[in-house]
Length: 592
Image 1 (cartoon, rainbow, N blue to C red):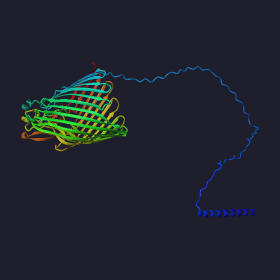
Image 2 (cartoon, rainbow, N blue to C red; image 1 turned 90 degrees about the horizontal axis):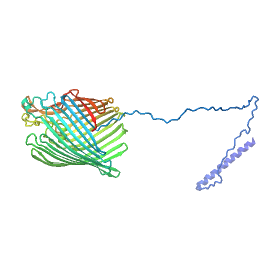
Image 3 (cartoon, helix red, strand yellow; image 1 turned 180 degrees about the vertical axis):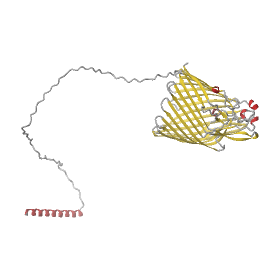
Image 4 (cartoon, helix red, strand yellow; image 1 turned 120 degrees about the vertical axis):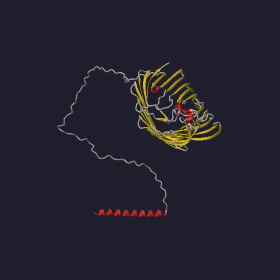
């Protein structure tokens, strides 16, 4: 006990001494600043772990029943076995190949039907040597007429010949040339009911004949600032002394700037012509226009984004314009149009957004107006159309690997847009020329804005079946005219092709055109003066089917049925079309 008390006492004393020393040290720190110390490590600290206590001896087993291990004796008996395996090379699975279709360089197709309808197509491609080819095509379509309730002759024919030559040097320069001729005959049979007596009808010569000939050349050069170019000259004339010359030069250049290329398209467009007969035998109409334009364009590619930045600059001049012998003088002007487009892949090939704003100066020609409406009169006023801008936005892509789509909305503004409208004659009974009667169409120009919504679906089910659906809605706003004459608000079309088997095939074309507006002069209960009558052309649907059978590789037969609904609808006012039309024909392929 005493020993423990002693130990406790010593501990208390030690603690007290340590506390006093610590206090003294603290006081010293208040007076003197803390100095630096140098610690020299003499030997690194290397701790060791001693072995734990364990039994050093192995235990001994002393069991009287422990069994003794026995030695196991074994041996392998080798028995020779004859091997019948023989390695062989693997053979690829055989794929049944379809026989290659024999290709022919020429074909001819001939068809005949009711209304004495006839069509002829001929094509041949001749290889003059390794790098020269000559293509020739002839197309003809005609009918002898027979539309119900038509008072005049309604027959027509359209024949066209095209010859094309191409030379491919397979190195730097490729060039070619084309020449062609087209002859068309149409009749102005669109008279409103009870407008003329039979004697007057018997004296009318309602036929009109159009002629058009062209020659063109094109060339492309690799590794050159001059990329490609095309030059075309076309002459058009008719049976009433009308004539027109159209010259178009379109070279294209590619100019490198830094790491990009500027694509520059140049356009030199000259149109000159006139009409010998207006609504007066001495009234002549002449027009001459020269358009010169430059369109620089820069394309930027960034991953899924494609942007085209460009603009079109035009100098336009009109020279020697005459109306009834009066010179209207000349006029020149400059035009600038945007040319900006962009597309972006939102989801690979499935969703692609695109947009753009574009403008252009459009050269209207007598030839193009005739191809759009063959019943125009040879007394037209022709001026260019100033398409200030066409802004659009859309989405296109695929719903699946077999179904594609395209949806687009656009807003377009045009100055001097041509509109077809029935001609007005103050006294049609005594008009000296048939085209002066209110059975032909003239062209009026107006400033028109157009809002449109377009949709398209493409079904590519397999190599044998394809289907396309298209529809578009239009909303027009005119500046002067009360209506957008002869322009529909809604159009819809269906195109289908089906290869049933190696022999049978079929196709379909269905189109719908909505209501259109026009106006013409009509007698007021048979008493002059004549009054202007507005007319609404009904909407129509035209269903056309075709089927064929291949007898062999060279010969096939076909049948077509057009206007299955048998509607005598009016594409233009007072111009009904033929009803149900059936045609059968054959096609033969051959080599010269």
